[in-house]
Image (cartoon, rainbow, N blue to C red):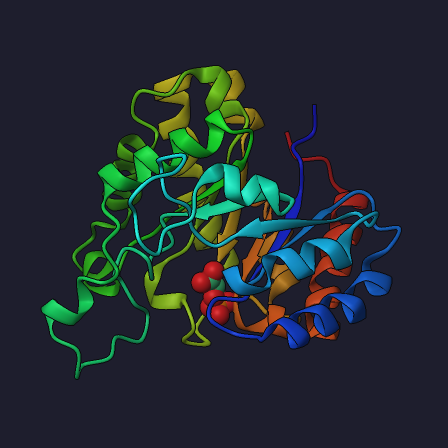
Amino acid sequence: MPRAQLIAGNWKMNKTVGESVALVKELMPRVTGLDNVEVAVCPPATALHAVGQALAGSAVALGGQDVFWADSGAFTGMMSPPMLRDVGCKYVIVGHSERRGRFGKPDESLGPEAMRVFGDTDASVNLKVKAALEHGLVPIMCVGETLPERDEGGADNTVADQVRAGLAGLSAKNVAGIVLAYEPVWAIGTGRACDGPEANRVIGVIRSTLRELFGPEVAASVCILYGGSVNDRNAHDLISQPEIDGALVGGASLDASRFAQIVQTASVIAKNTRKD
Ligand code: PGA
């Protein structure tokens, strides 16, 4: 079976409700009929419900940007998997580097105390992935190395360790239903994307880690995205790589025409190549 191709937009902390609905209304007609690529948008929590309603009946899927592992309870500020399901989410991003407190462009004025607000660890990512799956959400689990980790030659080990820890205790069947995203931290929001062959190589490392943990069939079937400064100009170089099954797009997903162009690029690639 050829692997699913996905282009997902991570809007991060951008767009009011009105702006969010306007953006998807502009986006939907531009991606209609491109049915060989799945498209998803992940608006801020405040806009999920309205965007879910605006997307009803369209092929564009809705995703959350984070999730907590409990169903309900005294967890101020958190959102549960059933709540995301309730507003129509299919996907949820889990373990984004920004939620792990690992930034492509760190704010040097913030000390470690302030940074504790971004508290995800491998252990919390693992709980979130499990909770999302239990409730029928597709987690998009992000992994990626920082620049110092890369400079020290540790990129491959960092991502392999994050994959092992994030997926600990899951069955092969569960893992077959998730999406992974390789997002080198140094490429996020910096305008400096990883080049296609290197992103392809690291995603190959992720796939061989999956093979070692869950067997060759699961490793061959899991959709693995690249994320980090993807735009309408570099999308082809990245998405046409054999191991790369799509993109998680930040900045360029805030503009309907740029995002739609990335989807169109992926659709042409999916038509011409078979990745499995
Ligand atoms: P960027 O963000 O495209 O703005 O670099 C990607 C991401 O964080 O998912």
